[in-house]
Length: 260
Image (tube, rainbow, N blue to C red; front, side):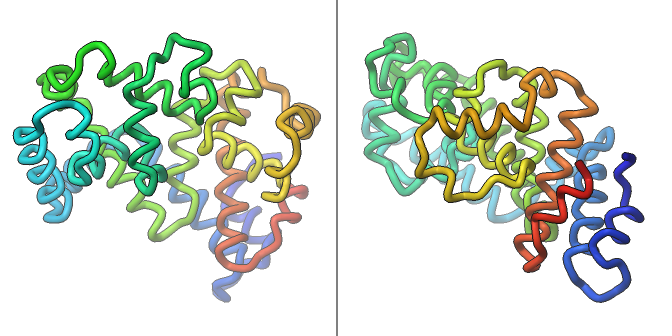
């Protein structure tokens, strides 16, 4: 079934009433607009001029210059305010102690802290290489540029959510899910898990079940090979945006079954 704004509007109610159908149609249109060639570059260029973003990056540079060692750097909220969003860990800002331990852990050690955390931490630890490189690694020109660029792009992407819920998650999913071949890696990544379960219409309460039960619930509805099919990957992202629109406007996510 071809997914388009007209179909969504029809299925969810249409018209100018401001109900879930309109939000879903707007969300799909916003997702496709964000995927258009040059859209991210244009959005990032505008974000670089935003006063809040400029201030945050200046404070990051000041704090990094004053840091005496890598541990003190990872305790500074001005530094965490940039590196966590840049590395896809913005939702972990409330746990600075855990963040410091995780980012200084050995990603190659199967018994280390990272083995029991969200897979995003492992990816972040590898990118930073702070366990080996220390503060010098964090101050390196290439890594600093990667972090500041990542922060600006994060600010741009999350800004899209102000108008249409779920867009930033959907873009992250489209960028990263195609590399996954293991269901437990998806469950171990908070964002990928949120998108997949949301797109499949699985309840949040599923989180209290065993990881094996959660894995079966997903794989009974989704073939992991679908994540390597651009068309099917796109459809999942769109279904998540529809679910997010329905949630934010009070619409029923059960209507997603009509688009299966």
